[in-house]
Length: 321
Image 1 (cartoon, rainbow, N blue to C red):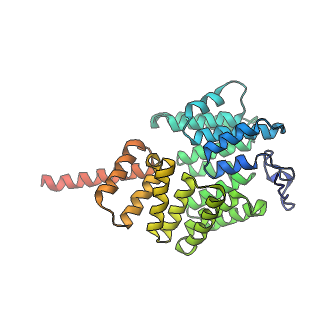
Image 2: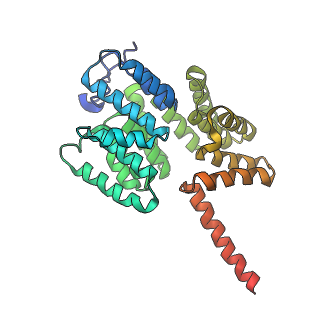
Image 3: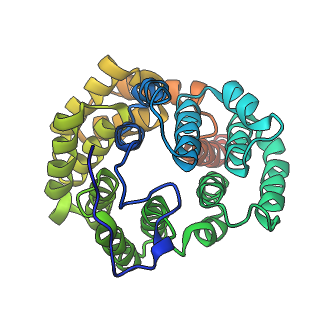
């Protein structure tokens, strides 16, 4: 087992109770598979690790990671059934709310967010770091960036810090993102989470650091195997660096090997990449049609529909004239 070093510069509770760095890390492989986007492998590892003796807090984290993997695979009914049964932890309850949010019609989502706020306000559960993390994800999905940041800004766990980096990138505060990344590296510079997060910041910095991101992501892919998420990240890094043919290769692999033809991020990246490569309109239209049919709630699709509607309205004015 890998034994991680303990950071003496941080208070003892800097890491969550589910990430005790001074003891052998029984869930290292499960966490790694989840963070790298290997969700089916994560479920297999979770089932395998269930046969090994471990402390109660590690058992709880194992269960949460398995449910999070189901959520990432779109198995919303299973997640809601797991988290809605009586006696379940606040963390699993929050994951059930996340599944409900993602599977509900837009007009139903406000009530789910309200239920989440009630859960966060409960003194018995408000300090649960896993609940805070899932709440952050739900608020991000609802485009409530302030509330999302409030859930994780104290950086109580490594995943909280990683989410801080992503939120700061989203609001164009790369200076704050870099500060949060440095804290994450202080916790464990060699961790997969720190490597992934550093690649996100490198991509956001621009062309000058795109090769750094490609290097990190390629190394993770070679060591642990490619995934839909890793391939999309590499494609984004290559596009930022102006290497559109390499990006297209990443995306074609995502389609061929990981079902990327049904994934919103892959389709959006294919549209952008194809435009830069001057591909024929029919090919781009194929990707756009697939996006509109299967990913109508995606921000890219919503923005596109809004722009197309505005164009049609203006065009009709001139036709009438």
